[in-house]
Image (cartoon, rainbow, N blue to C red; front, side):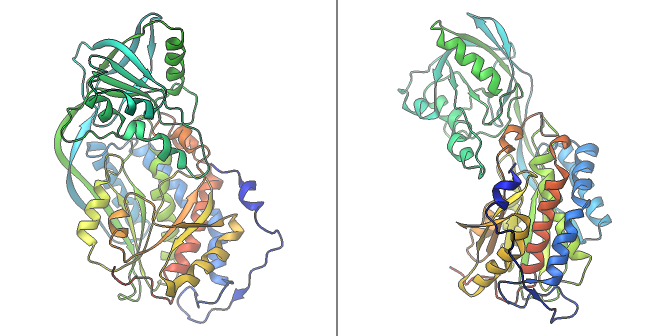
Length: 471
């Protein structure tokens, strides 16, 4: 996602790093010295640049399981696959922690312009979408250039109409455009329904220019009946907008037949690298195991579970760390973060020293952000020194991103680290049929593993107290 030169240009090519000799045999060194990099941490980091474990996990999960919709039989197969894989890698205390969740599944999905320029369009139903009649729904289209325009529409003005929101997202390195344009999908269908719309189609929340639509979740208010809601491919959205610009009324036929199937089982898969000090707190890391179903979920988020597990494996294969590293492959993140909520309920009373999540693809980490108590600020400085040779700069934001770690972070006692990956191409692929193994760049994947390995070696052994005073 990020161009390597962008980050490395910010670094002096002559930057030197002091080597801190080991002082605690049997453990990776983190003496608290700054700004140097302990020699064993540097060796771990550099060795991870040749890592093959992460790619093996992504390849295996996408090939042997494929797409993994939350709460379905495919996600259950993914959990079973994960247990076998994590045990084979040597992790300890590997188990599944199940929970129940509501499940939505898609059905038939077609769209066509009836008039004035008849042709088929490519789209996909949004998660939680309502259904059209089996024979379809035909209605005139009302065009909104932006989500703000939809919000400004008078109450009742969309009765019997199909709303079309052409909300064109652009790529940004930090992914911030998702928050800007995403509400058209997150809450737009609910807004349209309250204004009387019979259905809504939106331009996919993506930065690509192709015919593969982007799936994703929407949420209707509790007092609003879900209407049919779908995302058009960006190319088809452009085409539909051009038709509308010719000034003739446009009529669209939709066939969307998704349904809610009730409450079913999902679960989190948990594995550990046991630590030597049970009072030092847990380092919680991971990503989410489920995926949308148009592709095979390679960048979202097989890569995240792979990166974090591969880094933890490198710590597992050496001296035992001070803190236990807990690897969690969260279930059902895509449809509402049920896995993170279930983990928080089951483990919120445990001492979590730090939490970090990988859920932004497999392109290079370009920025480090931290969230430590005042007594542990030096840990961030040591991380900065250890990660700089990988082309990673330090940001000024407060770490703690990630839907699945939010229930733990919200308790206010846990330190955080964000290893931000470039978003330059992420939203070209995100939730599309193109989210496949071929979109993984092995060298960038290895850079992620190296960054996470160095981070874990430092935070899992830091002498500072990372658990914050309760708010």
